[in-house]
Structure formats: C-alpha cells, structure tokens
Length: 277
Image (cartoon, rainbow, N blue to C red):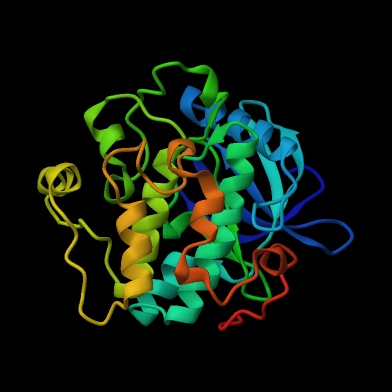
C-alpha cells in the first residue's frame, strides 16, 4: 500500500477489494485494489481513464493511482455515508423529496459521462455513495464503455446487474448511452417502492419481464413520478427519455417530477439533503 496505512476493509468484489487507508498527513482515502486477473486489471485501467477525464461533484474523485507488482490500485476520495444500497435496505424505501434529489444528482453525473462519450452501464444502489453531507456520488466505472458514439451498431457485451439491465442489453441488439436512463428509471422506482420494477428471484423470469412486461405501479405513486418512470422505462431506446432522439437529458430535467428543483442549484450542491449520514 506504499505510504498509506490500512484501516479496514470497505468492500470486496469479484475483481477488486476496497480498503480504507490513511495517508501520512492523516487524510482518509478509499484504495481500490484490482485483482491480478486480466478482468480486474482491465476494469481498473478503464476506471482510471474515465475518472482522470472527469471532475464532477457527483462523480467519485480519483486522487492518484499506484502500480502494484501484479496490478493497479486507485486512490479515491472516501465517502463516509457508504452505499445507497445499505440505506435503502435498512429503510425500505425513501421519501419523494429524498428520491427526487438523489435522482437529480445522479442524472447530472450521467449527463457528464455521456458528454464525455462514456456509457456508464452499471447504475445501481450499490454503486452510489453518499458523501459526508448526504449528496449522491456515482462510483465504480469498471464496466464503462468509452467512445460509445463511435460504435455504429452500439456495444454488444452483456454487462451490468440483471435487475437494472435495459432490454437492448438482454437481447444483444446493440446498446448505447440510453441504457443508463433505463437504469435511472429502475433506480428511481426502487427508491420510491423498495424493489426494482421487474425484480424476480428467478433471473430468467426477471429477464423475460424486462423484455415483455409492464411495471406494476403502486397506488401511492403520484402522477409526476409515474410519468417520468414511464418515459425512462421505455423499451425502445430511441423513444426513451434521455436519448438524443427523445430530447436528450434536457427533456428529462424538465419533467414535472423535478418541478421544485433548479438544476443549476443542484449542480452547485445548493440543496440540503433530506438525510445526512
């Protein structure tokens, strides 16, 4: 770990582990240590490239990278609020106001990635962290696809988490940045209801539901939320809210669901989050 002193394990995945470390000056960081297999190293290199290009208030910040004998380690800002996933599992679901601000912040992060010609492709509660003030931060870019607009037929790899995969990913039809808006709709649905819209324990039945079924909207979901969800969970990526053909991210920001938010103020982190870790 070089000059960094390990404090504790923050998480362990299939191709990396994340360790809370302390620098000689006392600052805390999250060090992501890629596994020494080819997949781990490749994902770490992609993540480093993406984060070196982006400086955004709702995207995880890369401080440095360290070469190890067999792989690479990324030194990232430490976000003490932890994963959105843990908060959601503990509380069941979030209030409308809380869900709205998180969705707006993640939307701006996704917009910045797409402006850099990057499809994120792994949006889910586990990959959204909360900073010390309670703002959402998108992390873990190992599955990101750079130069997505240069692929005439789109990317074709089957990647992401099954409950959040867009129909075009499951069908292998070729996908672009619109997959992130499908996942954003799935995330919003889960925050408001406590479960992803097509979730089933049987992965085959879940995939079939994503491809062919309509979500069952609970009665407590008001019209503005339903309207936005219907446009984000549109199976045709060309008609899906956020896609260039459907008006791009500006049209999503104009949705009535966000009527109480000024997105310039959101970008400045000008709203106080409902929940502070």
